[in-house]
Image (cartoon, rainbow, N blue to C red; front, top):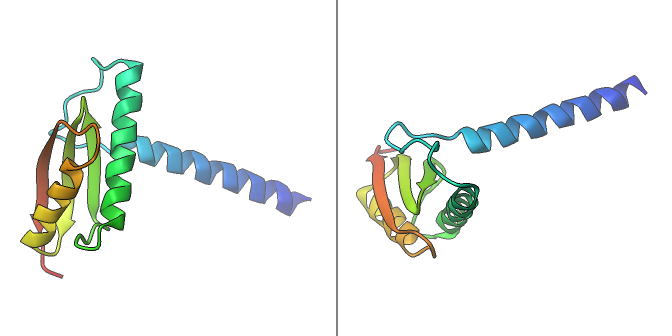
Length: 112
């Protein structure tokens, strides 16, 4: 019984940590969220999710080290990619997501 309670508690803590990590990804160049409405936050969250999914599904982008942040339809890409082709492809994939107003591509090219 103690093991079951421990597993439940550990699972709950892991879920909370994951949720906090997912919402805490910030970029120093992204504008503050204080002026956004709840609708904008939901829309930006949807755009971020779509961008991440499209980047993961793109065969021409190695996206495991790309971080995505969206504010008012403007998407910031940060992190690293192995080539300038990956950097350009990531921006192109992002720009093609519905709702994206513009892309700020701050990806750094770092050879493997």
